[in-house]
Length: 145
Image (cartoon, rainbow, N blue to C red):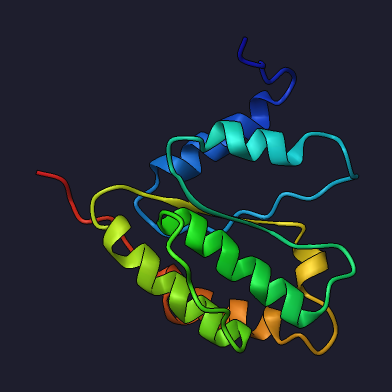
């Protein structure tokens, strides 16, 4: 039996509006642990979700990058993807994967446990910012005939 989202009407309305937008959108969902944030995102965007990556608590940079390559491998279809050497390289790999998938329909990428990924000296936040500013935010839907 499918689970139902209850009491999140405002959040779901906003998420639907974002999904219908022809612009690239960045959505941050935050709140206490174990209140259903991940469940909300997965269910609201189940048709558009093409990549999901969840950080590992107390993991090293090397472990996070290995985890990222595993997530990307799974998204591609379980092809083995080499572990990136940095977050900059990881985001380049992600952009290559996403480019052919966003031509006609808006897609969602989901980074879960963002604070666990963005550890001191990991380089994650500057690489994410570069990915967003130089690639992701520039993506627009092509007008459908």
